Length: 117
Image 1: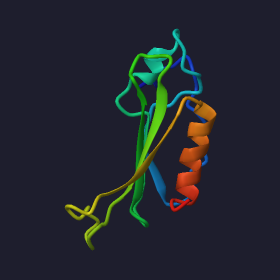
Image 2: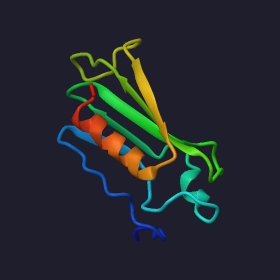
Image 3: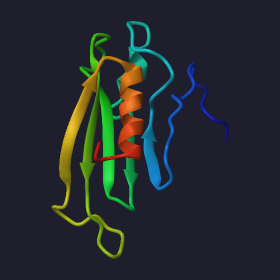
């Protein structure tokens, strides 16, 4: 089975131990008229830390708009003793919006290092 080829590499991220990145469609390219197809996914990044319950997801909005912005939504959930998410335990901790990809990546990495910051 061959690996799909993309014209851009994935965006490098510093991911601390304990975190899992479940969705990663964030490529190492800036949004612009010629590259918007790489930002039109419903999710760019989705990560969670089972040890702490902290989690995040992100997207670019409005889709297909080079003047759009990166959106990082941060949250926390509780797990039961079987490792399942406790129904109704999800808490929205806030969001971060920016047009700067560098600022977006820095905020994702900061949240994984120190979710309370």
